[in-house]
Image (cartoon, rainbow, N blue to C red):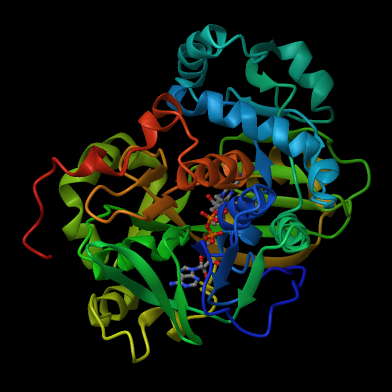
Length: 439
Ligand SMILES: Cc1cc2nc3c(=O)[nH]c(=O)nc-3n(C[C@H](O)[C@H](O)[C@H](O)COP(=O)(O)OP(=O)(O)OC[C@H]3O[C@@H](n4cnc5c(N)ncnc54)[C@H](O)[C@@H]3O)c2cc1C
């Protein structure tokens, strides 16, 4: 079942021309549209379903610096600054609150892993630190288990996923962006080798720049243009409880559970290390790039072979732009959550924090996460197709980084982003890998 998303008013249809077309109305696309419109650029955002219908409303709502890849730390820092200021900047109500995020030391190698990451944190003068057992007990009281310590960042926080991207989309519209929902982009037309237009299910939009912020659909969109983007999908499962008075304020992850207190007083609950990876044709297509990650993450992935293999096998990778594309066939991807993963999460949290024994479940949902081989997004132009830009592959942490990534993508499109800022996120970083026999 899909989780609730605030509705966003759509324009009646797309205009015939704009400077920039943003494909995808998740947190990254709406943030990019907002920052483009603030620059006075004419921008249209096309969303095949509803704003934030996919990952951007289905996530835990964590906005964290903790345990981020060192290459992303400057961008996450900027993003957290934007989150804190977004309600004022955009006149939006995103529900962002600074709550602190804590990773409990629950497994034998956790402390060493967290200490290793703190080396990077110190280089960037982050406030993240290890907590003692007593400090953990103070911040997370009423547990039955004593944790030896935790990695903690007081400045991390969370926003309300059901309303943050919709609020930013409304703010973008107030700045002049045209937001069109129920409008899949089928593909791109070129003239003299560069972007000239996009073709949507509701007509053509002439434009000189495109930003693909298409989440889990980005690899297929790129394939239709003859561009190889090694990206896979994994399933996250989440539940929310009804309001639970007296529960912890801090967000935390421990062995077999992770939670955030919501504004409504309930908890968003899941497991950090229990994603399901369906085996699909892309698993083989991108095997070479993903093999090192699969080996490193072996313990936290649950593989599954089922009907998704057949569904994706049947998907075309090229189509004529005057007929339906695979994008309009699925306006909102709404996968079933794993009951097993959620039942385990509920059992684990209730065993560690008995207050959760009284929690009642209001809703369960699933969400497909777009992952890259190095778990770092692509925010980049594409050398082979001038005017085409990509912001995707946020690998399970794009909600927190979304406003900063949207700002960077807007600067990329207008040529204002510095090479240094963009360097870690280049599209070209995967082009050296040998393609698999499945094209
Ligand atoms: C269960 C779960 C838990 C997560 N927890 C967290 C968390 O706590 N913190 C965090 O930072 N991140 C988290 N994430 C990851 C985060 O939600 C994503 O990284 C982020 O939302 C990605 O935003 P996006 O805008 O790139 O993509 P999306 O939100 O997926 O949006 C892409 C949009 O593009 C549209 N689209 C695609 N193709 C087309 C087309 N051809 N035409 C028109 N529209 C198109 C889609 O319909 C979709 O709405 C989680 C994700 C999941 C699923």
